[in-house]
Amino acid sequence: MSSSSRYNSLPLVSLLISFFVLSTLHAAASSHGDFLNCITLHSNSRIPIYTPKDSSYSSILRSTAECLRFNSSTTLKPFLIVTPLKESHIPTVVICSRKNGIHIRVRSGGHDLEGLSYAADVPFIIVDLLHLRKVNVDVKNKAAWVQTGATIGEVFYKIAKKSNTLGFPAGICPTVGTGGHLSGGGYGSLVRKYGLASDNVIDARVVDVRGRILNKTSMGEDLFWAIRGGGGASFVIVVAWKIRLVPVPPTVTVFSVDKTLEDGATSILHKWQQVAHMLPPEIYIIVSIGAGDVSSSGKIRKDPMIATFISLFLGDATKHKKLMDDEFPELGLASNDFTEMSWIQSVLVLAGLPANTSTDILLNMPQKKLFFKGKSDYVRQPISQTGIEMMWKRLVDDRQTALLLTPYGGRMSEISESETPFPHRDGVLFDIFYYSSWDEEQDVDSEKFRNELRITHEFMTPYVSKNPRESYVNYRDLDLGQSSNGTASYSKAAVWGYKYFKGNFDRLVSVKTKVDPDNFFRNEQSIPR
Ligand SMILES: Cc1cc2nc3c(=O)[nH]c(=O)nc-3n(C[C@H](O)[C@H](O)[C@H](O)COP(=O)(O)OP(=O)(O)OC[C@H]3O[C@@H](n4cnc5c(N)ncnc54)[C@H](O)[C@@H]3O)c2cc1C
Ligand SMILES: *[C@@H]1O[C@H](CO)[C@@H](O)[C@H](O)[C@H]1NC(C)=O
Ligand SMILES: *[C@@H]1O[C@H](CO)[C@@H](O)[C@H](O)[C@H]1NC(C)=O
Ligand SMILES: *[C@@H]1O[C@H](CO)[C@@H](O)[C@H](O)[C@H]1NC(C)=O
Ligand SMILES: *[C@@H]1O[C@H](CO)[C@@H](O)[C@H](O)[C@H]1NC(C)=O
Image (cartoon, rainbow, N blue to C red; front, side):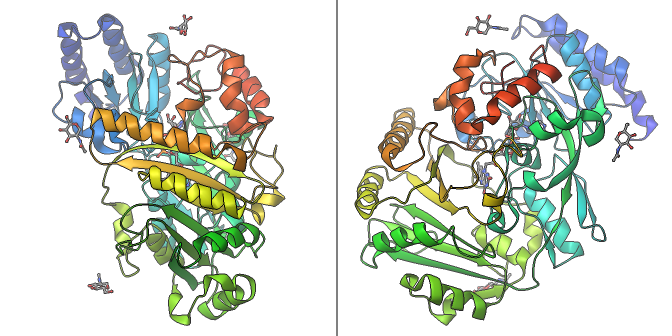
């Protein structure tokens, strides 16, 4: 920002203050005025701030809000949306919010499954990082600095623009933001070869509760440990990550095949559970299961249940096919099932786009927004054939829910449970992401669909991990326990805390107690002191 923008700040802010003086929506209007005065005093350049009266407020609020469940008239809206333009704006926002007792929610990609980055049931403001999305790729040192307003799709794109033999291990949905994703783990097609996105963070710039900008060295080992898997929003605002780029071959291979019950989906899935986590780390085979009418490849389903097996192999089609013929012949693949492409094209294909789509789409992904609710599980013992058959029956009754099964093993088994807060490592065969979605808000059905998902999750109890029943923090699920104002007692929070973090929960609590003793950074499932 040039210093000339400073001269814009006073009229804008006084205009905003006058809105607040008139506003009867929030009793604490004067503290909002104090907040805006504080921002003007502390910042030497204009920080764009939107109130509900601004014409662009709604479009900014909705822009990255991924889940339509929180687009209802009964959801409390932020009384301000603050959109920092540069790193130095963030300390100002933190200092002024804290001074005036203002509750903040930080938003990166807006994919939180419970909307915690843009919805709350106490008065709050959003600090939206949408303007902070620079990605600086350093091919020579195989590293990049990524501001947390950037999506993972933008990171993939910027890497691929500079090199076709470097990539980054992160999720398969390109619109996910780097702020939430990397602070909670983050995995996709390179998980077996290179682990989580957070396993490949080598430095970070954060703003702490005192408004200090810290890096890996100055924040200390404990905090640097906590932000790489402990979940966004409990400790600091992460401004940027330094990530390690990983080698990918110039040619990778993909297949996607549908298997119906008639094709033997039950026994094929049973076999998949035994092989997928044991195969060489260069191969990743996920399974998407659902009872909808149309499969993920767009075919109309005659069968009530389809399991789609999707694979990425870091190598050519010949090697990919040989590996499948040797280790998993039950899938019955033919040569023309395999398609060779560059790694960046595989990002598009795994996101459900045609292989010939221009990669530019990653900078501006079309998003069909839905109402949804998610849950997760970890499987450590193969589910029996009978169990799988019962699961098909349950999914026919819960047609709104699809399951995505991701194999672990490989690199994931080499990293100890306590190396980062993400504990689901050796011994995990695969994880399950339950995703129930519907595209119309009919209050009755919405509640019904969510309950069906809860029943499905309950139904899966005998087949999944126990003591604790593990969950993935990035598939946030408030059914596991919450507190409305982020002040859960330790014992209440420990219920979800051990599911998400196992024994690492206690270290997260001690880091929290040290770095944010007044619990400024909080939400329904933030780490308690
Ligand atoms: C459709 C869909 C597909 C998904 N696919 C995958 C997948 O393939 N693999 C996978 O691992 N996960 C996946 N996820 C889950 C995803 O990783 C998490 O939802 C992640 O937390 C989203 O990050 P975000 O920045 O987009 O979300 P946001 O909603 O912006 O943030 C999530 C949380 O992090 C906090 N936060 C955000 N930015 C910061 C910051 N800079 N500093 C501190 N706290 C911050 C927010 O306050 C909030 O609490 C998927 C989710 C959806 C909805
Ligand atoms: C969100 O709600 C608003 C107001 O009801 C509506 O106009 C808008 O279409 C909704 N957004 C989506 C994507 O459905
Ligand atoms: C981290 O910050 C400290 C203190 O500001 C500084 O001396 C150091 O050079 C920084 N480290 C890196 C790797 O940038
Ligand atoms: C991609 O391929 C399909 C056929 O498979 C074709 O119809 C379409 O026009 C192609 N799109 C582009 C952008 O080349
Ligand atoms: C939060 O809620 C609890 C009860 O759930 C209440 O005891 C506590 O005072 C509340 N704290 C704040 C800061 O509102």
